[in-house]
Length: 387
Image 1 (cartoon, rainbow, N blue to C red):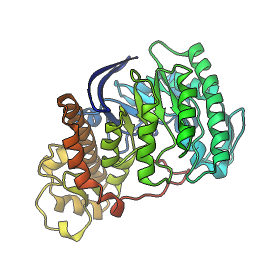
Image 2 (image 1 turned 180 degrees about the horizontal axis):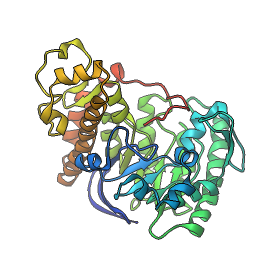
Image 3 (image 1 turned 60 degrees about the horizontal axis):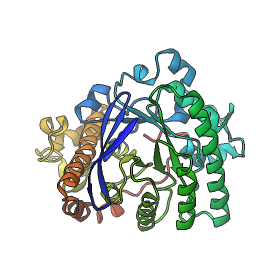
Image 4 (image 1 turned 120 degrees about the vertical axis):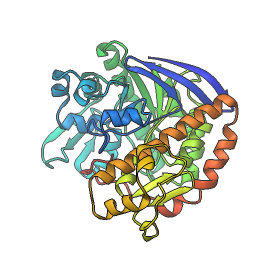
């Protein structure tokens, strides 16, 4: 894997990430394919909306169908029919969300499968890497511990130190067993304590990973605190390595984090919101089931060129949603991902032109006031596929 910076606009970066399965122009958004699929979409759909790279979930694929089976059948790219880059997460989010089913120790995480509630597993830093090697991921991550907000300083200190020890073990396992071209990103934790974020960044960077992830955000903390700490953490990371903000976020979060120097993002919002009838537009969030759309002949967004907006009216989409027709989930997902990926393309162009500040203002004018009213979401239950 290589990463090249092509332009900068203040702290924002326009880059190019080259992997064995293709090039990713950054900043980039990764649709979430938890089970090896982005819900309701095919790989052709993903290509059609401009997807460059997808995320798959280490924990879920470990439990079902199993990494050994995926490897036997040619690896995750072949298994899911996707020939572009794949990033796999660490399983650290599940360490957090599976609290009733797990126990954390120095060796790793003992947990009972959420699929049957009884089968016991031990997920170690070494096994996490082995799973991702077998899947054939282009970019993988070490096991980490993600704490909820709020968490006490002693809890965060102990967790941050444990994550650093796990990272050393995972780095060694990756060096010993990586396939050609596979990259490993370290994960910076530290909770919501600025000094512990710096401590974690220093310890992680000392291991010389191929890139760095900002973990432990969007776990219930105030939004302003998240934005401040994302900026602080990004500044502590090597300038010439890619930076990935895990599990964030809203359109306004994306533009603020890009301004702070983040290169890669993933979040379930565009896909999950589509399944609840919420769609992103240049004028803000639109709820398709509202009665105001019952006779509306307009597309979701007149400026959008996605298949859904070129073909169907709001009235028809509302009808499908109220009738619970499966097609509507695909159509709304196509639109939401087109919006997200289009926003990232606009930011890449704006950075190259030195004009990100203008785009940032435009996005915040539309979304900063809307999201707090409509969008807040609880953490999904552990047994639910979050994508």
